Structure formats: C-alpha cells, structure tokens
Amino acid sequence: MTRVFSLVTLAFFASVPLWLKDPYLLNALITTGIFIIGAMSMNLLLGFTGQLSLGHIAFFGIGAYVSALTSLGYDVPIVGDFHIVHTPWPPIAGFALAVVISGLCGYLVGKLSFRVRGAYFVIVTISFAEVVRLVALNWVELTQGPLALTNIPSITIGLPYLGYLTLKTKLQNYYLVLAVAAVAYFLISRLVHSHYGRAMRGLMENETLAVSVGIDVTKALTLTAIISAAIAGAAGSLYAHYIRIIDPEVFAFISTVTMVIMVVSGGKGSLAGPVVGGVIFGLLPVLLRPVMAPEAQWITYGLVLIAILFVLPRGIVPALAPKLGFGRQPVKPKPVVVTELTAKEHA
Amino acid sequence: MTETVLRIEHVGVQFGGLVAISDMNFDVGQGEIVSLIGPNGAGKTTAFNVMTGFLAPTKGAVKYCGRDLRGLKPHEIADLGLIRTFQRTSVFPNDTVFDNVLIGLHRQSKLGLLAAILRLPGARASELAVRERAAELVRLVGLEARSHELAGSLSYGEQRLVGVALALAAQPKMLLMDEPVSGMNASETHTFVQLIRRIRDSGVTILLVEHDMPMVMSVSDRIVVLNYGRIIAEGPPEEIRTNPAVIEAYLGQSAKDVVKEVAAHA
Ligand SMILES: Nc1ncnc2c1ncn2[C@@H]1O[C@H](COP(=O)(O)OP(=O)(O)O)[C@@H](O)[C@H]1O
Ligand SMILES: [Mg+2]
Image (cartoon, chains in turn cyan, orange):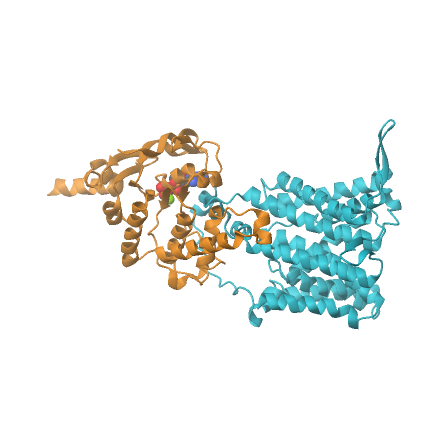
C-alpha cells in the first residue's frame, strides 16, 4: 500500500512539467525540490534519532561550494609560492565529491558532539555552520568571498545510447532534482526500515534500554549524521549547478529554519513528512507573491505554520496517514510512573 | 562449584557522602540461579548498574568470564553477553511487542550498512532469520497474542515480559533481572518462575533481584543477602530462611524489640 502510494506520488511529480508550463512555477518547484532533499536529510536526524541539526545548512552549503569549486577549478596560494591548483573536473565529479566531503563533515560534527547529545549537538551544529560561513566569506582566493562563485557549469550526465547531455533547461533540471530526491527518499526509507533504523528508533524511544541490549549510541548517531550530511551535500551540489552562482548567503540560518519548518509541519519521523511540508512551505511564498504585499506574505506564511502546528501538532503526515490506512497506529499514551529510581538507572 | 561466570571483587559505590555499597564480594557460577535480596535501598540496583557498566564503582572490580569490565561501556558489556533488565518497566513504548524484540535483536543482525540498504543477497535471509527469532522469543514469554500491540499499552506484568524477551533477544550468556515479577499477579509469577527455569536450562546463568520471598526461595540455587550496602549472609535458601541476621534485617530493629518485649511480658 505504502509502496504503491509512493510510486503514484512519484508518477504525479513526474507528470507535472507535462501540464505545468509556467517557467516561473517550474523554477519554484526545482528550488523547492532541492530544499525538500535537504529537509529529508534533516528529518533523518531529527525524526529518526531526535537530534536537531540547527546548522544543517552547513552541509548543504559545503556540498554547493565543493561541487562548484571542483567544476570551476581554483588556484589558491597557501604559503609563499606554494599554490594549490585544481583544473576543472566535470560537474558530476563535483556532485560525487560534494556527497563525500559533506558526509565527512557530518562524521566530524557527529564525532565531536554525540558523546554528549541534545542541546550540545544543536550548539555544535550552529557553530559549525557559522564557522563554515565565515570561511566562505573570508577565504577570498578560494571562494571569491562575497563576490560569489559565478558561471558554475550545469551538470552533464552520460546516458546510455544518448551520449552526453548537459542539463541546462528547467525541464531537465526538474527531472534531475526529482531523480535525486527519489533516490534519497529510497535510501532513507531502506535505512530506517533496516536493523540500523530499528537501532535508531530504540535510541530515541528509550536510550538506556537500547544501550542495555548492545546498541552503540555513538556509532548509530554518527552513522546517521554521515548519511544525513551526505544527502544534504547532494542537495547543495544540485543547487550550485542549477542556480549557477553561489555566495556565502547559502549558509544563511534562515535556510535551516525553512528546513525545520518543512520537517516539523509535514511530520518529523515520517518519510513523507518533509515532502508534504516542503511542498507547502516551498510553494507558499511563490503563490502568495503575486497576490500580497511582502509583509502580508510573511504574516500569512507564519499563520499557516501556526495553524498547522496548532491543529496537527505532530505534523500533517503522522496525523493523516493512519486515517488513510497507512503507517503505524498513533501512540496510545500510557501513564508513566516516574519513580525516584528513574534518575538512578540513568546514572 | 562450577566455573565462575561473574565475580564481584570488593566493589564499593559512594554517591557523595552516601555509601550505597560498602564492600561487595561474591561469585556466580555457570548455570546457577543466584538471588540478590535485601531491603529497599540496600544497593541491589546499584550493584546491577555497576555490573553492566551504567555506573563506575568507587572501588573494586567486576570480572565477567575472567575479564575485567572496568572502563567498558554498557553496550560493550552487553556485547559480551552480560545482559540486564530494569527495575522500573522499560520497553520501547511506541513500538509493537514484536518490534521491541526486533530492536533487541539488533546485535544479531550482522548485516553491513550497504547490504542492508541495497538489500544485497543475504539481506533478506538475515532479516527473515531475525524475524523468526523474534517470533520465537515472543512465544517463549507467552505474549504471542499481544505481538502486534504497542508495548506501551500493555499491563505492567506484560511489559516486564517484554523486557525479558528484549533481554533474551540480546543473546545473554548471563542475565541480570531486577525485580522481574513486581507488578505481576500470582499466576503470572508462577508462569514466570517456569520461564526462569527454562532460560537457565538453555544455558543462561541468572542473577535475580527480587522481593517476592516465596519465589526467591523456590527458584534460587543460592541467595546473597544485602543490607545497607553490605553482604550479611550468603547460602542456599534453606540456610538463608533461618539465618538470624537475615531475619533481623527483614523484620527490622523495631520488630525485633517488639518480639523481645512480647517475650518479656509472657
Ligand atoms: N544515582 C544515585 N545518586 C544518589 N544516590 C543513589 C543513586 N542511586 C542509588 N542511590 C542510593 O543508593 C542506595 C541504594 O539504592 P538502590 O541500589 O536503588 O537500592 P535497592 O535497589 O537495593 O533498593 C539508596 O540509598 C539510594 O537512594
Ligand atoms: Mg532496586
């Protein structure tokens, strides 16, 4: 049932360019799609392990810069006459490198912060994002700083029988983003349904118990952080090659907030949540723009968010899915007797 | 005695100024059922926390199968096959009973990340084996009728059984159970005693903390009695039953005085 529904949804998204010819809306769908990939990666951490990465945009931005620089090339002086010179590689190599480097950053941030979790992870990720933004802003020889990296080439892919295809048009980029989003969704779905996913659920629900049956918390969380960051990096790479110009603004905190809104409104911990929340909050500004003054747009945006969270505090998908016959049953709350021993057994 | 599985060597635990365990010293042999008893606050749960790495002892050492457990994290100790259950009910409340046991079987799924995600050959077989084992464990603790209900919605007695199934899922060589029958009625307790025997007969060594004296007396090979963080008696049930120090610890000083008084007035 769930699989059929996923395929129908995919087919629906694939059909959109066939009946939606407006380039302005198609553009909005592409950037929304890219951010939905980012939101899906954030949901993997937030929804399935309970860890809030409030600097999640860092992994996205690193992916964007790595991919852009790999395909543009650079010549950076290090000390004296010693330069690091890189001649341009194909953008697809940039994409691959973006995934790897972002994943590596996820590993580092995870290793640093998962010994102590919760608030500590939130702080480490925010700080990490700010540091990376400052590097992008100030390492002018590499990143051009606020002048931005421009003329980033579009992605070229090799297709069997068709030869090489450079994805320049909106239509082509729409399908590229859709394909990457589908792969990311599939990977996350497989992951959370594997025994690794069960370990993550266990940690989130009752960490003490999970540890007592041999689940390695640090390892499970770090692994999740790597995969989450790698997917965010892939989204960043798509962004760089689609927009074709990036500056340190890609690290803006508001982008992380947008992803949080997408995840929380759609329903964290549900696979489809970030997609539903993403479509709503990705397209809402675009739909409001022609009909409202800018101030009114943001107020409406905020009101819609509040309304959703007020009516459906767990998010849209977890609230509606059981009614439609999918997913797990809602949790029957059970009075939990907290004895004095609670603290002790956590000690 | 047979080969020693668990050796508690001069373990002491202090919380600030409070001495929870002063000097604990005892062994558990392969295949034994040993009970650790004592009044509330005697330090039994604290002892379990030390044995399973949730708490570092202030002094002394825990050796399991000859290996010093000092410095090992709880999940590493679990990996060695030393598994515990918890005094307060502890389940994954938002998962079904079956999924609870599946989570407990995590250690048994040796599948690599890539194999799991790409469902490489072997992944399906491994997943099937794990599911089969989960069903078996649910049956073993007698919860097959509840298999697809959320663990958090079960009665306390049933949740304790989920806890035991989870612990068994982690494939213990030795199982520590902290007051497993509290919250169970008489017939549930009776069934549980049979379960404990069956677990032992399958080769698992058992250390039990329990307040239900008739149960402890009937199921234990040996009993270790703890009072105020100190072992005051150790021996087979029939010896413990008549041990004056134990009776005093359990009835308390005041009760003893009452007994004396009554005797004096008689
Ligand atoms: N984390 C802790 N911090 C402070 N005191 C504790 C802690 N854990 C246990 N204690 C104290 O240690 C003593 C032994 O507790 P516990 O091991 O839970 O006893 P039992 O399980 O035998 O009832 C009690 O006095 C208890 O209050
Ligand atoms: Mg206790």
